Each structure stands twice: as structure tokens, then as C-alpha cells.
Length: 210
Image 1 (cartoon, one colour):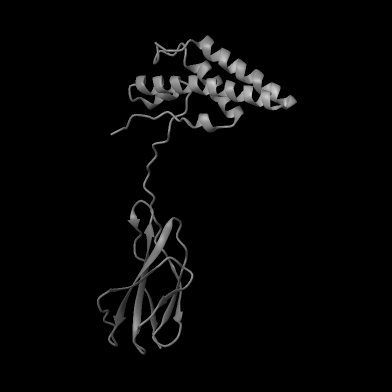
Image 2: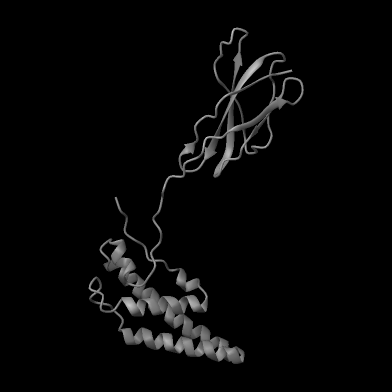
């Protein structure tokens, strides 16, 4: 279900040029727009506020606190008008994003696409001392941590149950400790993060603990 579009109010904190750009876009698109037949502010009022701000902005080139104060006051008046118009557009766009955009205002993005995590790949699995293996994994974009599971491999090749080994934020060197020397282990890793939570498990890699 589509949510009601929200008008971006970032112009209030934009550069002076950004405020001018927003005002010009609204002047060009809002009045005479069939989606908004009852604009509460005359176009001439917004144009006059924009002209006053533009003139005050030019005066600041000469420097001086008075010129800066005048510019700031003119900017505040222009922003106040734009906020009033933005509220009108949001209230009267009928939940239609295209109509809201046709006003000249920008709309807050509603893109909530799911961020899928790639399945990690094991780069290396080596000994790190007695009862310890060191796992290296190719980093996965948007991953916050990496979860590792291990399973013992019997002499006849039978793979035992998978058990959680460790969760680590660092993919470059993940230590797997407390292993039994002389036992062959299968190791898999998955990434955690993104909007989907988990990636798939990697292909298994095997190594014997010393």
C-alpha cells in the first residue's frame, strides 16, 4: 500500500542558492497546476519574497552585519512562504506522488528496496595454533558480522551435526578456537546485515585442526 508522499523540507536548511532554486521551481509549476486549484498564496507574493531575498543576497557582497541581517530576514520570510505552500501541497495532493512532484517541490524518497546480502566466499582456512583454525572470508557489502558454523568430519567421511562456532565483525581473520587436535572440520560462513538479515551459507571448506 502506498503511503502519503511527504514533501522535502530540506530547502529550509539548504544553501541560499538552494532556497532560490526551490522557490523558482514552485513559481514555475504550482500556479496553474490543475492538481492544486486553490493555492493559498498568490504567485506574486512568492515572487516578491524571492526578489527581496535575491536583492538582499546581492547586497551582502559589499559586506557588513546589516546587509547579512537583512539577507537572513529575507531568507526567513521566503522559507516561511515555501513551508506554507509545501504544507498545502502535501495536504491536497490526494496521496498522489506524481501530483506532489508536479508542484515543483521535491518528495521524500519511499524506496525501501530490500538489501540482499551476497553469499560470502571462504578465501582461506589455515591452522592458527593448537586447537585453532583461522578463517578468512571475502568481505560482503552491507554485512555487519559474519556467523560461522562447523561440523566434525569422521574418518569414513560422515559429517556430524553443524554447530555454531563464532560470530565476528572482522572477515579478514576469524579465529575458531577450542577445536580437537587431529580432527577434520567442515566450516561454513554466512553474512549478517542488510534488510534481509542473513545471506546464504558459503560453500563448505575443510581443514584438520592441529
